[in-house]
Length: 434
Image (cartoon, rainbow, N blue to C red; front, side, top):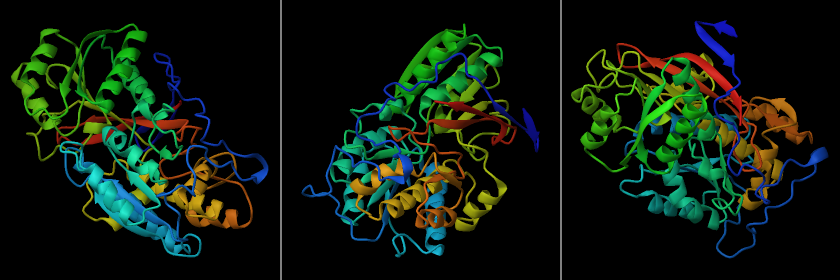
């Protein structure tokens, strides 16, 4: 282990849970990297000549389907900033296919109410060649067919549900993400809980594709490590009262609680405290969906000692400055790096394919993410492509090596702890191969 600036970095073997994605083998259409710089084969699930599909016009248009409203609205500003910063850097380096990248933006919401469908319609009408988003896995699952049936790439910086590695979810091979599957986050969270000495763990989670699947991974890891899950209680994603669910958790007398939630955390924590459980009674753990700045939501000290996990390598000071220059009002940076990298990977794929037709450049997204000559900026990578070289883009969020299903094959999970000011600070970063 290397200690740097008080942060412990560790590459851990996550023994309590198998880090193998369900359905992570090739779906038969996302082409793996071709050898010797040859073009990857075209996707079989769609054709650039199909009626109603995106035909490209020689100028890359980036659409953003990110949360401006809803329970994940706190993720919107850093994600929009990541995309904006990437577009700025790409255009400063000469653009894509000799033209500047342009943007169209829309609000994804959080699925309650469902506004994502109409937002996708507006992005498609704006000639988006790629739609970056959504942040919530459930929202992406609700619109993935609308996007990919139109022959457009969907590239999420924040989806973590294992469902996206099921070939049935993405038959056109037009879906990608820079955030790792919750198979990894679930294993890291389970390991953290067990390493902290807790063996009777309750799980309280949203009942949606994100919460339920992550809860299953945490439960699997706890049990595999010899721990006991006292209760796994799910609540409706549009619930406004959580008394019944919290009461069920309290009745099992756990020594730790994993809370897999979004912004409803601001209601669940007071309900826990009212029932005699919570951060001052048990060790509580958050995940990426509710790791946020709560300094304005709770009295000081409410979350002291709470631990949290979310995907992503350590945010460097230099890139933090980039995001703050883009949006000086940022207080949270979650998934900003992943948004930046998704944008750059798309631009590099378009350059490599020499086409902004999504079905033509999509296979190149995987190819430019791994196995070639390493490069770390769009300008550097683009210069190598123009020299006819195979590239391996390593981004600000980490290696971003994508596998055949369009998901990262190795990734880093940060482990954080809340202080008396109800904000979180890094403890260590765990890297695993999925």
